[in-house]
Image (cartoon, rainbow, N blue to C red; front, side):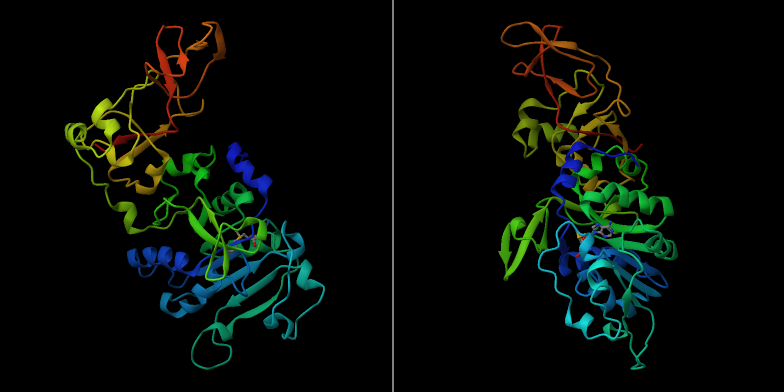
Length: 383
Ligand SMILES: C[S@@+](CC[C@H](N)C(=O)[O-])C[C@H]1O[C@@H](n2cnc3c(N)ncnc32)[C@H](O)[C@@H]1O
């Protein structure tokens, strides 16, 4: 996959990938898939890469539910501490140092693999005591041949991967055509490699509500937003992305007609300004997902948060309102006139939605002002 948008690349610069998912967040999300299909994990091999199996909540959660979910095999792998961008304060755990295979050098330079498959201690149950672990041959890099083999053996891949390698990670899953559930940066959905997958219903938002971001446990002191119950926590604008079915995906959004919205919408802007058409594209602009009119048949530009409510039986995603590969404006302004001096500026063939607005920032060569629309997804009601 080609590298995506610049905001995602900022995550690459920040390079702090050491934040860990809370048990409740994993449980709340996974429950949605099990409720929808109680056999979703039955007889499946689940791989948890980019983990830290000794204390990762992903590993804990699946170990605890191994029997209830009817799993065939659970594999988790971790990344060598020396390969991480942030590695301060590393101490091997007692669990590791007390094991016969403990290796003073490998503990820093090699990844680890944990496998849960059968009742090895013959106590009649499969639980944490049946986990087997060892060092990997290499660092545990998900792109290594060694972890690729594990990927190919698995049915479902679940993790919170390093955000700085999100595009590479998604591509790694898609090329193997695996089922998956991962956590991603909200901005990733608009990326040129990700948007077509969502548009074409190959991947979609998980169940969790996108508002408010998610809280993760962090080990990096420079990265703490809040201390909760003595734990250093970091808030990240993140979402679940998946190709596993869940019920929320098939719940239509409850909406009013256009006439009712114009009279009763809770948004003053809709009541006062109505639904404005774009100046350079044949669609109406809808600034709030709950203000989408239920009875409009034409194209509609909606906020990116629509993905979180998208029900493919209710709407079709047509394209997005930004970028030459997605959207051909009906009109180009060629240049804007500077509001103060009247001189032409910013010569443009701009693949971006604009709306006529008397107070707009840009004076067009046609003698009226426009404003840039916010980032929009273009949708249409399913007929
Ligand atoms: C965001 S953390 C999430 C950890 C864990 N999955 C969780 O949610 O609790 C991502 C982890 O991936 C590791 N990582 C970074 N680059 C990696 C790579 N190329 N291959 C495998 N893991 C990597 C990081 O060191 C970090 O521990």
